[in-house]
Amino acid sequence: MGHTGDASHPEVQEAIAHVIARTAAAGKAPGLFGTDPAKFDDYVKLGVRMLAVGADSLVLGNGLRSLAAGTSNLG
Figure: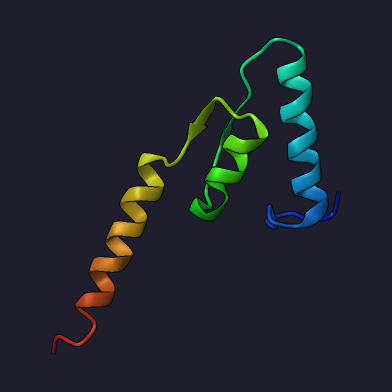
């Protein structure tokens, strides 16, 4: 597709919607790993039945970055 790292690109979103629809049509429960909370409701509306909304490494990494940002002013 040529949109590596850009899951919000319209072509990528169209492909995601297509796969969700085909999976549901085959009688299977569509699922995906979501990384953008703003898209979670959209995916559910498209028919996603299993939505992974985080991974331990992402949660830990985000928490540590937040913590580090709060300590940048310490001398």
